[in-house]
Image (tube, rainbow, N blue to C red; front, side, top):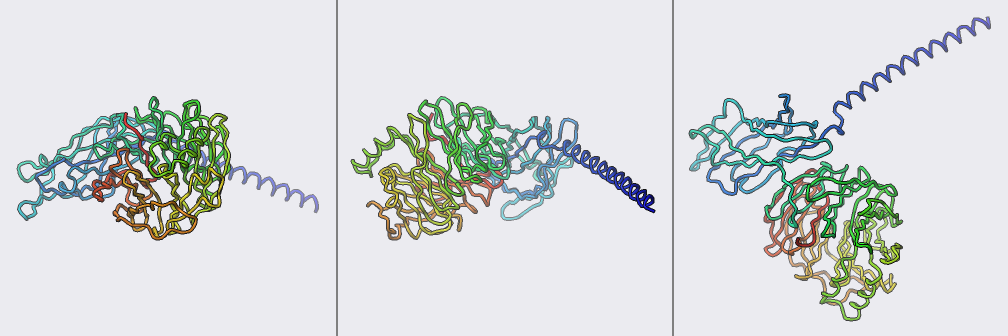
Length: 533
């Protein structure tokens, strides 16, 4: 009997082993099949295409058409859909305006033709609307573009509505086609698109996107370099834990710098080092640190512990700015000037611990240390340095008070007296811009989607709350605005609207939006070069 039991036991074990082996084989085969299938559509063998449409600067006809889809033809004759969400396009609405038609990942290769599927076209004449006949062969546009893996290719169509009606009743739209052309200009603006994994390049003079650059995953913070002899744009990729370095002469990524000491980089700022090279300061939200990167060697050279959830970072501007101050007393200007001969500060907004870390760098010794941790209000998310007044303004998303840090008091070591507040500025503030020439502050509010203009107080701030600031006015912008910047000429404000996937260009003198520029999905940060060439 024991032998039979042993035999059954061995048989059961053997059977179980065989079944387990078969199961593993099936799983392995399924896994290999899945991997093989994934390899066929791997993002590593794909690039990205963006298709933009612009209307003519002027048009004399009122034409509308329903664009159902857009397909692109590869060299082998196969078509791939790149736009599947129907759009109604009107010639008058499109006058001088650019829209993003499609954004799609494609296998690398060359593509020869666009096919536009139009379901209806109408023309309005003298108050009446007539339906236009559609061309029998459909609408096809010859192109000649190449898509490269891990890169972005942009294609620009311009619609000539005046030439798009044949024989008075046939809709045969005329498009001119242009690919992106690298251009180096101080007029360029760079916007990170978090859910598109790319950066939109905007020409301020044209008021439109002129290129798109593929970067790492979930790009957020972005900063323009300071060296005139070697212009670069630096992008913090939160999803891929890296910094993409864009060469603006080619609109391509020349280097991907891994962040090894920190995780989930958010904000990024640039400073000049003692040797004339650039140093990058990266706020690592996931690791509560700031990474210091040598932009010449592309090496992460230091890690500095800060507060919880660092989300934004800013660096003292060039010390020459102090010389032009008309707000600082002579004594305070001298304190700041003497300090800057040896040090500069890095200011880090720690959202989750509700404070700002002030880091001091010894320029000659190259050493970093945290010299202050200053408490602010709920959910600080952004900051701006006002060297004319010797202040740092901190936008607190969850509070209606703007925190004001006195740089002179920080230098003196008076942390307890370094922070004051401006009350009643409203909640959900996501950005702040200083305009010393107009003696203004511009606060960006996510809800209701507006810029609030306030005049800072002429007297010095105290630790107690100030009275309600003098509100000069408000300017409506797009949906869920996230970032704001002012151009070097101090004429326009550029607002990144995260909810509406565009950028509002605001004339700050007229206090109105003069143009809306389409970008990618969930745009986040914005940067531009701070000087002329």
